[in-house]
Image (cartoon, rainbow, N blue to C red; front, side, top):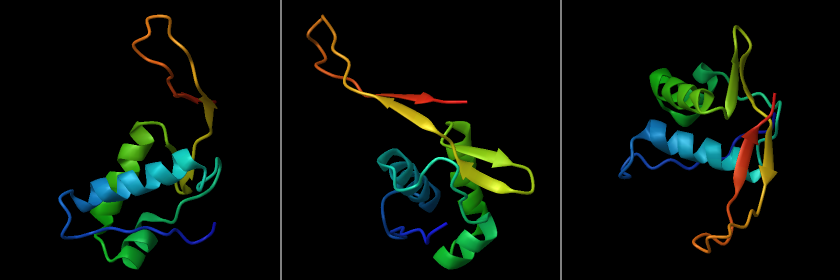
Length: 105
């Protein structure tokens, strides 16, 4: 795994766990973090970012709960595989397109 580039603002309007969640989910959706890639351990990332382990754990658990990450006991967290389907047209005219992300097994 390459080094993560994350920018968190302690004085920002959002809690640090949410900023970390947003940064990691953005990198997963953009393809910067690829399926099967292991994330740093909670302790290592907390040390590198000078955050508490609880802050990193909260962000990782949120990502896992939403299907971005897969937690493996004693192995850490890996990025789950997604399939992008875009655009879909709707006849109603209300929406011109929609991006759909589907979790693959």
